[in-house]
Length: 438
Image 1: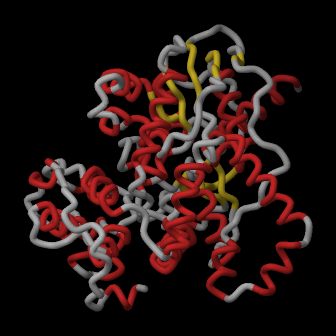
Image 2 (image 1 turned 90 degrees about the horizontal axis):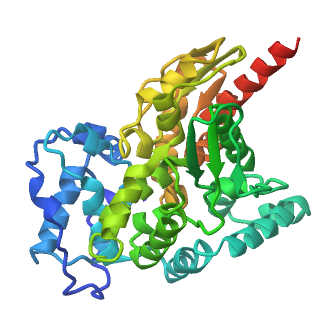
């Protein structure tokens, strides 16, 4: 794939001929080039068309009718990780993510007919149904524990075997709190709602539980609305906005009138998408204003806790860690200092910064499946940066980053643990309570 992208691509389908790209943000770019070395794909390939500036030029050419938004065009647009590091670097404030999302909406999901069919099913059927997601997760758990997985791995060709190896262990239980409202521990300081999420609820029930406990220990009533669903981030990033808007409306209805001070999210990609519901629903007169209000209520868990200040007691955790900035937290939500401040508040914990902590690890939603070669190049770069710190663990408050780094540790090293920030805070509170009992 990487070598092929260095050569002219063949012209693909003409099915998008006549498509209209109306993207006002296109004309903010002054082509200064400050984004180039912040772009993961440009750092690897050193090709102008695989940079934000180059892609903006291509999208502008398509918008002006000078080129067709065809398969060749799609190759460049979909090699982008949507990490938005270019937005951080841009002196003109270009919102590149909106440009790429608009282009992908025209293109739709890419790949073979089978790949497109799988993506369509996932985006329009699977992610919209929490019940179906749990059923699929149970089937995968059976696949892993029954011995079928070992047989399948022995039969798969190398490429598919690598992809199958990325499948994380499915836990024995999912996130399903016993009550919709979990009361504050101690004096109440706030009433918040919490996104359960799809990946977080299925693969990281313990982290959701830890997040709720940390919020409660900091005086928050935690509401977990039953009517909530997937945030729609994967749909938005892959050009499927029709169902993304349905998902957004459902969450706005579930959360907005719940009488809460904030909507707490512990997954960076979900938080970024939910904060931008106002843009997603900008043409919906019934939801446009509500979406803007909702977006202002959404807070990353670290952002919210740093804002209200942690309550004690926090016990000691003797550990040396490094911190991985999730792209949609650092670049999308501009939340950088708050997670580090919370880590610094844990007694005994030592933070060693890695080089390029805000460089994408290559997870990027489903990117590690759709663009595995580029994803692995970036993952190797990330693991080298982690190894240079000699830290025994990495902290990455985002499910995609956690899965990617755990896979990287198994495949490339170094041997290490990967934690969500809320896990460590919850552990510190547990250690603090234990110390008080002694």
